[in-house]
Image 1 (cartoon, rainbow, N blue to C red):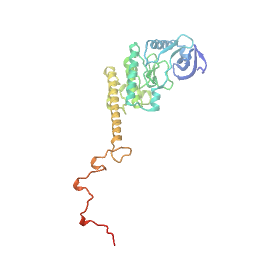
Image 2: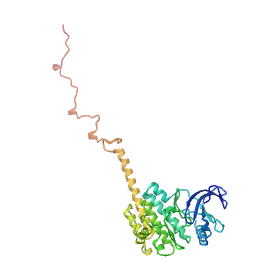
Image 3: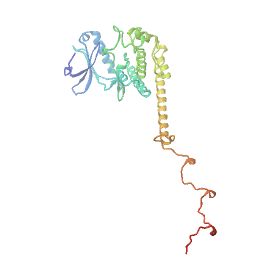
Image 4: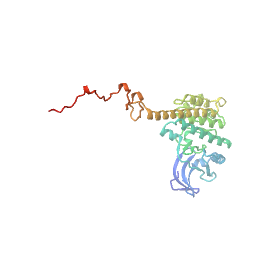
Length: 329
């Protein structure tokens, strides 16, 4: 492993971001002091022609994608003794880190995430490629929205992965069961991962649970997704998008619509609560501290002009009834 301060291909390495079976990812700076992510293949991998081919494919893939929701490739060296690829460094937390630290997403946050990832995947697919590894740790959250990173070249060491040489690379619980069965990667697999990622973001737990790889994959192939904590309409749409057979799955638009409807309902409810609160502050019930109460006229204490019959008047007594002041002799 390279040390901080070393130079590689014109880049100064600063720190390790992650490490996996294919290589190590460093934060680095280029000649213009721009911060980038440099993915350096392990020496034993660099010596493998198939690994270099995978690197070339990732570079070619990323070069064809132009979208703010997908990390851009900036440079690559696939033929040197130490092969590497350089991409833009995305500033932010991964979705996995965010949920672990802050908990599940609120309805409006989930809607923004769903649409941002949807648009990124559409851009990838429109470029004629697929991501193949949509999962929480490959989603970066930024001030401008979610960004998809890592087309499978750098793999975090802690991930549990399925690998059949040249066939499947992915994370159980986020990998389309059709890939496990031997199908070629395609857009349907990316949308499967997208739906699974949204379940994780909304609930805070893995969509197909934890446990040994075989157990998780068995749940995946049965479509046994855990939607505990999801609103009913979102849960139903998510389950429909995660049906094992691709031909029986709902279109991603159905899950987007359910998430949008839930966000709109939550927003309307919050607005109603704010309105009720403001009305209560203006005319709340008597006895509630901080409320200004308008007292009905019948109960008001005021200056009342009585009817003439009820008025107490100052009377002038007749002369015979008057008490006079006498001057004694």
